[in-house]
Image (cartoon, rainbow, N blue to C red; front, side):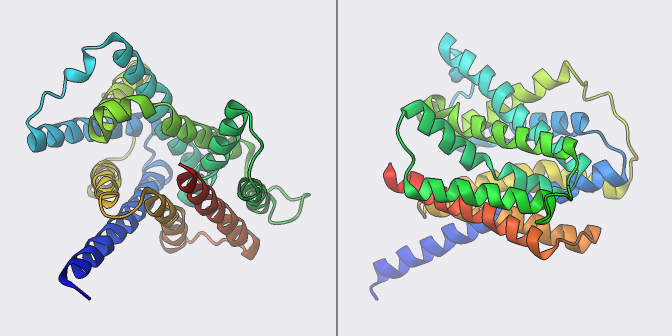
Length: 306
């Protein structure tokens, strides 16, 4: 093996490790949020405001330090301003809030798995939008997702509903929001790059949510543990994994990074077992596996066809 091949191999390993770490940290963020909601009586509204504003400001500051470029230049075009506001509200804010509420009414593992139905929603939207029949792999992916959701909700018995209606409502809404979060900002992403789009999307989403729930309108129990969990959600569960993920796609294909995102629901499920003594039945694990496999199939098909 030549030195060049060794360097390429090392960079690829670096990319794979970064992608796995990013997904795992996102899973940890869900566990920290679950603890705050269910053990410390925090509200999803307050946490989403704090998460978006602080993470967004830190990301924009880091981008400015790294590039020395004007981070406010994105607001020179009226059309771009509208797109950023729509992304901040319909993308960043919607996906974060619905995900947190789903966690509040269930647990991080279930909320994350339900959110991972978003590739199915994206696929169905593109099929309808492009007016073309789905491929065999897309059909298989959709069927697997439906089977997986059925197993999670019923444990295989149609007479037994294993998940509350409100959890299912917010979980599906979270998947729809995640799909919008992926599809809506494609134009401004291509023009301004991921750091500026994500940073301003977070800040705008957080500011808009502040009109509904002020960051000073706090309830919950303040302790060293709860403060640490907030820091985990904001820094370890948002800022660091985003940077790791964006770094990973410098060294590996977006397809591979997307597939490795399956570590997020997996880590959330394992950590739920460890910290909250949450036990999944065999059929629930099977259903979770079906949804993760759906993500892998649809991500691979989408990227290979581009």
